[in-house]
Length: 440
Image (cartoon, rainbow, N blue to C red; front, side, top):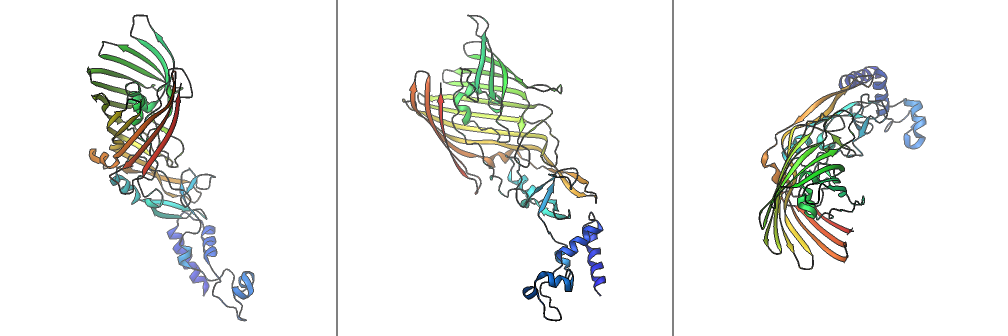
């Protein structure tokens, strides 16, 4: 009478797991069968005679349809072309994947409540799981860059600084035009590193952007006493014929107390779209950035500063290991006040949206199943519904103090302390940062 029961369970499993072979179905039934609770004709039990004796009497034991239909091993999210290839999946019971930073809560909820296919590492059986079993349930679980004063840009060509001038050339003694080769963080250039100097660290920029530096040629010209122009070109090692980044900045001393600047650029931006958290993705095309900033000397020791930037990101195709973007737009806003003491101590407080996605579409290639030979099948998932008001969700309050400790000639030792806290999300963390810098 056992054969009909086994055949029935086998039929159920074949219908539930069409990618499993007959031998895999057999292995699943045997693995989940049990001799627990059984007793031999002479009173043998697992407790008194052990598993080997019970297997000799009952074989694999009683079959269990519920267990045979359930997960046996760890669940894996497929990332490769074939499930059986080594390293072709991510164990989601051990590792949560990363969502892109700057997503509004409505889009995050779409992802967390969406269904995904994961595979049992025991035999490749597929199971449906929700996004909250794959991704962090809190959109603020990823650490964000703490806003704080940046190290002053070095003119000494010292590679120890992230931003420094390698060399410069002035065309004539009476000329205000200067050509320089610099190394700067890409995101700093996009909002005008020269205009902000140390305050560039207080200006919100999307955490989606990688903070790597690149070599750049800059040509600066003083058009008049109040107006200056700068154009810059990104130096890359691209060999595919794609265009390098370029842009221009216009700075103006509008009044004795008000400085304005505008930057427009097209740039190759490395983005943190890899779901495992390691590595970046660079779009094949160039992203466009427009940034506006102002610095108003309200009093001798009080300055009001503000910046607004819009990033139209180039389209990126998704993969099973990285998100894609279509017509994506990020925005960032910062408004702050700086108090300056006569001894050089500085304190800045303000609010900032470091960067929120307000338009476009987020995509991801997700597994839909596999063939019996392990060949994976994928389909593109799409998430949209972004709003221009979504940036309010990512607003943070920041406070940063810069305390000079010792100054010797052109050298200066400083201690910087920064505090940052989100105020629109209940689970937004409060972050505290310390930095000791020595500029020479």
